[in-house]
Image (cartoon, rainbow, N blue to C red; front, side):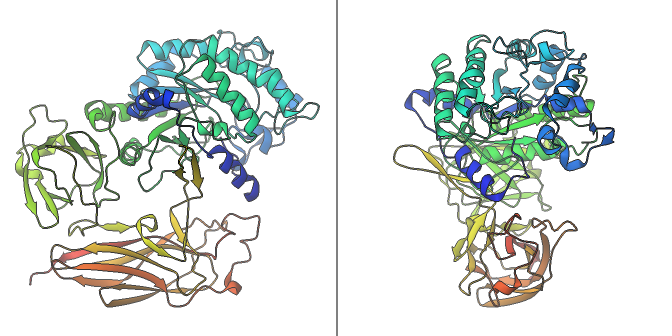
Length: 609
């Protein structure tokens, strides 16, 4: 995966080439549809770095040196790295146990790291001896071949990750020793490796590349794997616009719908490869909600785990994977084979759909036991809890601005609720018809994000959004999560909203202020003017991503009100207020030090008059 330490210029260049595009070839139409239908896969980083067990030269490694970038970050010489690997024996490896863990998640496809940036191949290669079977003490055969057979036997589609550009071990590889050109390295190692991977292990469904930069190498890699496996899905990180699906940045979940095939890769802990102290696991509920959100926006989720130094998948990893699968199996109709809906952010969760059925994913239950879905206009046939085998009908009524579903109209409705994600199937006739304009929910929080606002003089940053041209090629615009650029007086965000009832709402702002001084924000709603002083927000290590939430005030809405929420600053950020630690080599240096991530309207309570 990517190195968080690289300079901003190199990072931007690499990201541009990773995500420059996908070919969208007509011959791949069926494979793309199948891949999009699958929706959820498991990634596995089994890394040579695990052999160090978090220690080097007798000392425990710092946290920022952990993971699969260990060799580069800790500046471990090649001979030292090689010697450590000669003693490494992941003797507890069992392909059947690993495949069982993957299958427990109910994921549809599997991607295994056959070679990461440190150069050790995790398959039996005839190209050179620097592989798990020949260079380490491991004596259990071809690990990739065994895994491929094991997951395929469980109905899971195999694929491989291969670092084609970065190779710190081989002369000519990017970041590696001198002595050869990159082209010579590719002809001697990378391309022959890919030949082996696509001819010796049966059908592969995904070729996941990483850190691709030179377009010539990218084109050769994509052409070679498609030569032997015409339907294989090539990740856009191959570079040069030669991918079949777009890969978001590491662990990035876009907040809005994206057209075309795309994927978020997410790791279950804080790193991709195993390290002994990396225990910051994401709970199953977080992954389930993330999966539903990504599917609602048109993407796939590839969830990563990393086996330990002995070749075991941790008990905690296995438990979380099983919990995900336990939810996913009875709720699979709402995840597999579905597509994005016109809805953006809803107060209670997200929606997915297939023709004839909308799936409402409830991450939280409304306190009034009545669910409001704004703008739904298709004729309704029936609503029911997806896990209810009897499909007991829930009462649905048309109300101002949308429909309302009575969750208590089924006597035993608590049996069908899930703490992470309760799913309601909404069957309808004809075409899906939705008015996606925001309508305020009077029971739950109403959150508005910059990506869905009308913006004046402001930029967005945080995830890459692909834009397709007439040739079907995709180019990624940089990042799209928070708004910055408040150094001009005209900078503002605006959202159009309506209210079906008379009500009052608290207004809160989620922001980051690195300017060194408080900033005064202005929020107006229908002539109601609010101002608030937003204090400085900086974490101990000057992390510019430190956001906090402040109450701005409260506003009133009348029934039937159509209003504009307008957010701006009382005065623009001056250049002199740019914090000194946001130098050119720091993340965030491209903006003025003040960012807006969201604004939220939270109902005080329905007014009694």
